Length: 412
Ligand SMILES: *Cc1c(COP(=O)(O)O)cnc(C)c1O
Image 1 (spheres, helix red, strand yellow):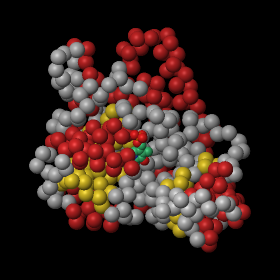
Image 2 (tube, protein in one colour):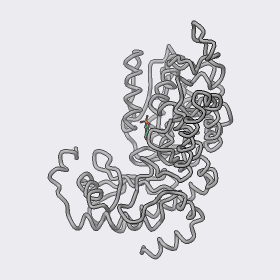
Image 3 (cartoon, helix red, strand yellow):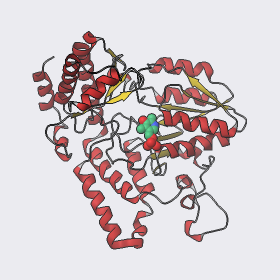
Image 4 (cartoon, protein in one colour):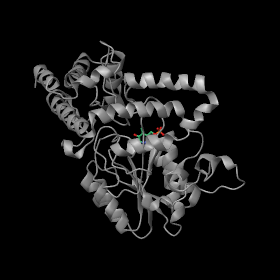
């Protein structure tokens, strides 16, 4: 594998021109962190200025159009994620949406005392579920962190029973990128009489999602990772039409009320997905999401997925060639069909190594405790040659050496 081969892949890349729509400065470190915070598309920068201008000129009158944004942008995102209209909202944060939906399921199943998640899942997801379990006297069952999807399904089936209220899992695991089959997992949970809540934080904008087709009950996710809507842009939630009116989310705000401006004495949930709103939406953030989605729509999810697989395949090959000989190992599924759009490399010195990569202005990647460096190329703007250069820079920095003394504290 040489650099010329990576350049040839870029020349043949049908998405190559999208990089020009992003504000990519020349020189400096290679950005391999699009799965933590996507780069700003020029369209989002323009949309944010337009939103501020609307605020300046329309003032409170702007609400006439702003008030519908969570549902309108939600429907638009839904088209990318296989959700028919009226089932998705862009609102609040992923954490808050997770709390709303998980609480709604638990309240709906008073005679079922078990919530199941994965021990190694993203911290905020586990914390929210711990909090709900403690507040409602439920039992939180943690599945062993499993590297691959089929063993996750097997370990889930071993604990599913008539006591299971809710199963909450990530479609693409934030650390390993392991991807599970949501249709198979959802069907297994339904057979036990439970509901499933999927976290799509590392899926949306990179891998195909088919919420209605998979018969998913509930889902949440972020818009600032592969969707590129900016730091703190609102999250999203999906509530399948079949369960919308039965479930009731716990934050009874005025935006979720049936007639918001009647200011009635008592809360009456709006029909449909509207009852999953809480308070005033982030209008500037929503306009950023709308502009970011327009870029994804033009690229197409199928093309993004195609390139995602080829980017991570290239990383896996380069890791084998350049990093395995220095004691690293692949901490992600080896086959593109079993993973999302990032690749993790495990090494005992991952923390000081990752820090040296940033300090020497070579590669921006994420350290993930205890021992992984996560490389997240983004199919809209990361080139194949960037993957080549990033892994080569990792090897060079390792060979140059770095201070490992401060690293040990973080390597548990
Ligand atoms: C990034 C991420 C989140 C972030 O939640 P916020 O509320 O936006 O901070 C949640 N879950 C997963 C799996 C993530 O990867």
